[in-house]
Length: 152
Image 1 (cartoon, helix red, strand yellow):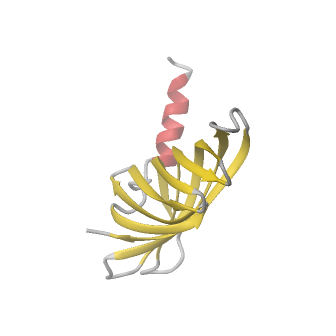
Image 2 (image 1 turned 120 degrees about the vertical axis):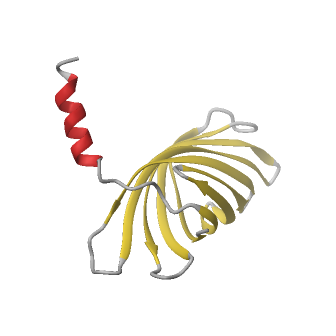
Image 3 (image 1 turned 90 degrees about the vertical axis):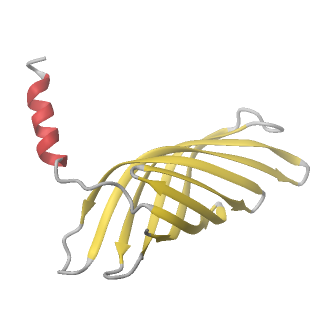
């Protein structure tokens, strides 16, 4: 336990000033592979669902940390990181199945001063697994999204 104490103190000093995660509220997003989706975030937990080229998808993410990016007074810019998993149902040219995507994520968010909304961009990197007509096929994969969050 004595060996862990310095690590715990270092971690607390490094991340003690981190705010809560991405802005809470309802949002809309678009990207790859999801063309259009909706999300809802409470504290650090976010759920979303959307339509993609060949099917439907849903996911849940946990935002682990967020840090403000010092830019200029009144310029509310921050980055965030987390982890999650997505699940998609797809069908294309008679081939279909389920797509499972555990991933890590990183993004940047800008909250407009005095406005009830913010915009963000995010990249998710993980391991995609296809099931169904192509079971077990998968590998390193990525998703990207940009969105608008309406804060309460």
